[in-house]
Length: 228
Image 1 (cartoon, rainbow, N blue to C red):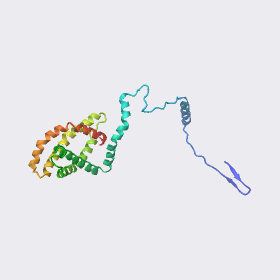
Image 2: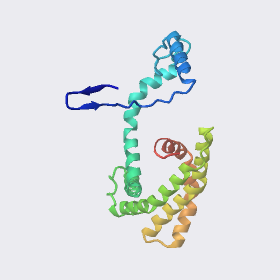
Image 3: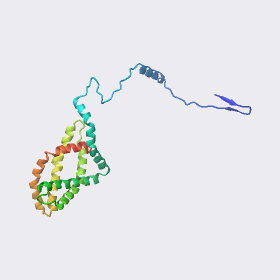
Image 4: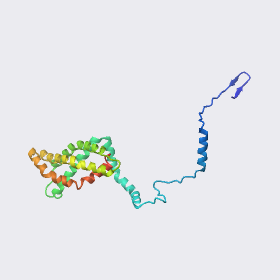
């Protein structure tokens, strides 16, 4: 307790010290830790990317490491699309689906007319395709998000993806194809009977051919775009 003063006054300054609760086993434990750390050899600095002598870098891992920068660039548009979908899901799906349907009809008209050499492009048909895609966008997005959040088996990625693809092909895809073929006839001015006959004639062939392409497309979509 320091004491300072002069001829007229005497001031006593008292500086309290902060109490520190020390358990009976605290000091021996700290001493043991310091002693153990002083005797412990320094751990080598390792990196997950650097193979140890006991685990050599395999050809697959070397190929994967070499392709990583290129795959990052290739998947950048998909990640940007995923961020846009998270911010404005309905608007993103509306624009995306309607654009895909319009471009699909454009390619179909080009193939049917040998590059528009035999007949010109039909804007009314392209507008019908846009309308059909716009009508399918929100229900399709809702279905895909429900499918992505369900049927997830952590123990098996193959089982999860196989179940989703099977449900997609057997439940949702026939409904989409029925909607697409019937709306083509109805928007062209056809009758309900004509639409029914169009579905009966085209649905089996279209559904069978879809197994050649859509399972791979669905696996890629659920892996890189949706949260499945």
